[in-house]
Amino acid sequence: MQKLFEEVGSLDARCYEEFFLSEDILMEHAAQGMASYIKNNFSNNEKIIIAVGSGNNGADGIALARLLHGDYNVSLFFVKEPKSHMALLQEKRAQAINVPIIPKLQECNIFVDAIVGTGFDGEFNEKITTVLEKMNTLEAFKIACDVPSGLKKSGECAQTTFHADTTLTMGALKKSLFLDEAKDYIGKIEVLDLGISRKLYETQTNWHLLDLDDLQLPLRAQQNSYKGSFGHLAVLCGEKPGACVMSALAGLRFGAGLVTLVGYENHQMLNIPHSLMYAHALPSNTTAIACGMGLGVEFSDNELRNFLDNDLALIIDADLFSMEVILELLERKNIVLTPHPKEFVSLLKITELADISVEELQKKRFFYVELFCKAYPNTTLLLKGANVIIGSDNDFFINPHGSSKLAKGGSGDVLSGLIGSLLAQGKSPLDATIHGSLAHTKLAQNYTGADFSLTPEDLIQGIGNL
Ligand SMILES: NC(=O)C1=CN([C@@H]2O[C@H](COP(=O)(O)OP(=O)(O)OC[C@H]3O[C@@H](n4cnc5c(N)ncnc54)[C@H](O)[C@@H]3O)[C@@H](O)[C@H]2O)[C@@H](O)CC1
Ligand SMILES: Nc1ncnc2c1ncn2[C@@H]1O[C@H](COP(=O)(O)OP(=O)(O)O)[C@@H](O)[C@H]1O
Ligand SMILES: [K+]
Image (tube, rainbow, N blue to C red; front, side, top):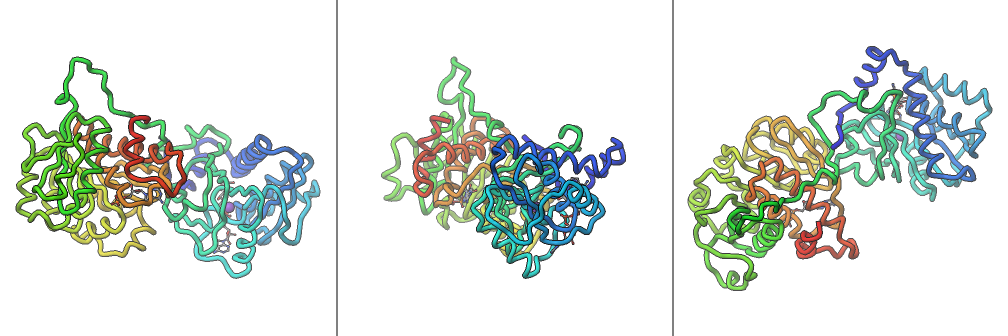
């Protein structure tokens, strides 16, 4: 698990004030880190162009050119003239050793974008936009210095933003790199130390980035056991039983000892897989309930209240987010909510926390997750998306390991089955959500077929090889 920060300016300031480091020392390490990355990954036959802007991001780029000049065929391309104190100083140092400057973009093997970093806001003017468009068409390996130019502090992207293959980010990970919108621009991310170890540079934070290695799978260590030892997941089954069947099968495969579909008998129910049980009422030994997937309007609010009149662990998804009964369910202590953006917007409206569009939510995903978790500190929220956000009270996690393979109907049903299964097996709501989500994204990564072909059944089948 890695730490995430809203901004790193205060961490830089702490280096100056408490560790007696200077801006120059920090920048030299940033540039050294980038130079090492290039030296470790590319031979010195490669032609390198570094596009620089007027601020300290540009200054990083100029310092990098100085470090590479002599060993590599490196040139600077000034998109804007140096303006900040450090950019002017770095320019003087580069001039002193005659680092070549080119007047316009050329083909190259490695391209470094050091136009703007964390100081960028607003939109680029036409001239810079044209340069960025050209940069994006270069066939070179593209490296972003700190952040791809165009990515804002909020995580939103300018209309034209640099498309990096790798982002070499300074000091610590910024949250903005993990907004959904940024996912297509950042490429692979590496963090570079700024003169002290990252462990010392970083301070306390309540936001973390999940690593796939954090995944803890269900344990079957106890041999003196039977099916009841591993929990009983009840999946409330409404109008579209297919969604519930996928959840239930995922839950069974992920270790729940028993899984029962609970609902009315109808003709579709006659064809459920034989490994699943079926009942009209909640089984007495139920340990967790999953509800909402494919629910439709099959149950009245009163019928739902009846099923949910207990304090069992509960995972809620899909249709329930637009039903009034959700307000009562939010009072429960052990509840997990897994909305996609449209469902979360509906939840925010029903709870009177915000009346916003999906577009507004997507621009401020971090903010609205925090807002909801503050208002409902007893719940665990998982906001779906390209980068999943998990929040509980004052702890927040981002799972960036999913991919567009998962953009298919039914992926979310499998996720609720995975989380429901862990709840049934006794994990806490937060742990069940973190490990269910990690398992879900790892399943997609493990799938070896074509990206477009992954189905929910493939995810379920892969559970045995996690
Ligand atoms: N201690 C430090 O301050 C360190 C800073 N570092 C680098 O410094 C960067 C931050 O430097 P700055 O705060 O100078 O900011 P940036 O260099 O990221 O951006 C500021 C510059 O961009 C221009 N700019 C802002 N919005 C623009 C727009 N819409 N269109 C065109 N130009 C625009 C501004 O005029 C200014 O010249 C980091 O991203 C990082 O790369 C690193 O060297 C590490 C140490
Ligand atoms: N482009 C993507 N990148 C990463 N994960 C994705 C992407 N698209 C969808 N997902 C994931 O797939 C799941 C989709 O869930 P959902 O929208 O509820 O689908 P459904 O209701 O059809 O099962 C979520 O976990 C979401 O995070
Ligand atoms: K940049």
